[in-house]
Length: 112
Length: 115
Image (cartoon, rainbow over all chains, first blue to last red; front, side, top):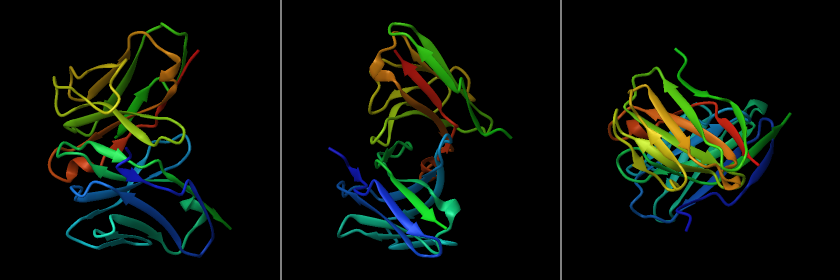
């Protein structure tokens, strides 16, 4: 059973608009969440994270929102740029030793 | 500073052949990981290591073995390759410690095809 779910395989957005990528989780013990970004033929790179003691974390154009009661988090990119076109993975730690459980990813396309 | 490097970048194997994938990191990280990525499946953890000389199983360990003889290297072995092991393999490393371990640094990947 998937513990981290990204139900939208793809998302297309116009340059300059907001991109909203969603992630749901089932394990209420998760207390930390991360977003990774992946370009084709490259490894994923860490983008932003959030602890469950917060409901929002912001880093430049990227903001992650966490709704613990709904077991839902979202990544907002404002304004979206063509260079943001990539696959975005939501992840949560499974234990204290760094094991991450990844969602299946959402492919974001930002059109000029 | 090369970060995390993986060798080879591409490989084609016949069923039953063996091979070793090499991962090296120059960031003095304690933790290292091997993942596989399949279409529509995200990344799944195969094995991981929390320090030199230690290894542990992840979510999908069957058919793979690993070794961490040196802190900077983490080897993934396939003793008898099967078509189901066709995938892209990513190595990652991280610092130890709460929350630090979650920010993992990934290599560029190895694309393996088993025919």
